[in-house]
Amino acid sequence: MNLVVARIFFLILVWWICSHIAEPFFIIMGALSVWLTWKIAERMELISKESFFHHPKEGLQYLGWLIREMARSAFRVTRILWQVKPRITPRLFTVESKLKQDLALSLYGNSITLTPGTVCVKITGKKLQVHALEKASIADIKSGVMEKQVAKVIK
Image 1 (cartoon, rainbow, N blue to C red):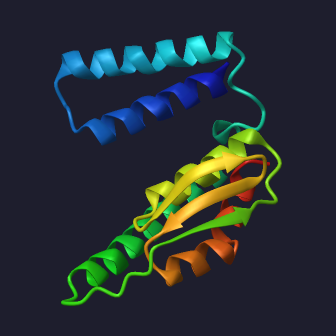
Image 2 (image 1 turned 90 degrees about the vertical axis):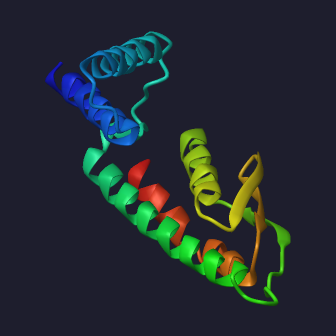
Image 3 (image 1 turned 90 degrees about the horizontal axis):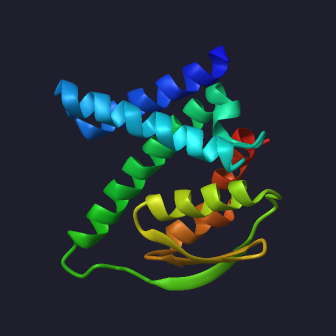
């Protein structure tokens, strides 16, 4: 029970940090919405053992890594777009994943989309169709580093 309370508190803290709202009414409503969402997901049996919240240490490490990747990609895309003649080579390509769980594939696809310059267009089975703005982004995804990071979180 204490672990559930800690997870709910963590989600409330994340909500509060992301919302930038410090008014008591909104903090209470945000906390209530997080708690209600947790209870509904629990009742629907959506919270499984493969969940991000069952590995909080790895999850936080992944979140830090993802934020660094997002910043790095944002600077790269900004640099490209500020050029007089941008050297973009947009491509649509498919990458096959070794991840087994649906949650892991979903997290992988969402992580690709959160990284500037790339969008996961579709997931079919274990194949992800990705649109990339430049060749370097394609190489980053095909290197498998992001996939390995996701695999650490979703065991």
